[in-house]
Image 1 (cartoon, rainbow, N blue to C red):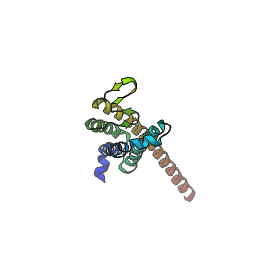
Image 2: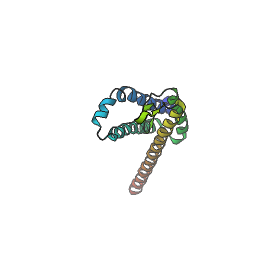
Image 3: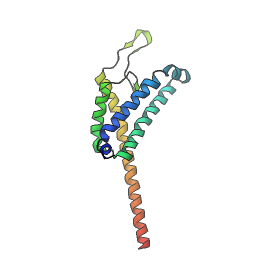
Image 4: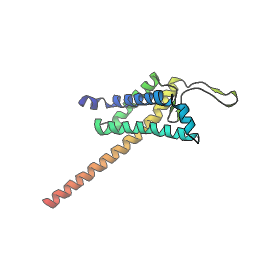
Length: 161
């Protein structure tokens, strides 16, 4: 457990990358036709997809903070590690608000897939921003709870003493 607490800046991005990769590879791609058929209006599927990814990122960040001592100081190393992971491999998919694959559109418009370095940078920027906000909120709540507990214990000592 001590090793996990020391390496939490590596553990968090690896967990996020792995779960997002599995989600995009095994759930989103095979089920895309099904999602498109049930999502009416067309943006409902996008909203659900974005909320699922936000839940994954925020949930794993909260777990890393609560159980492994992840903090803002280690955040920078974590973001660098996440950039390297997404640069190594990211399947063409929607990552929050970035679509990394190519597409053919209306009137013969064609968009090439995004270069891996650009996709990795944009994905990391988005995910890092969500991780930072989650870390700051959970840290602030934890400090507030600790100070409230300290005040209650001091008041109890004053009453008993």
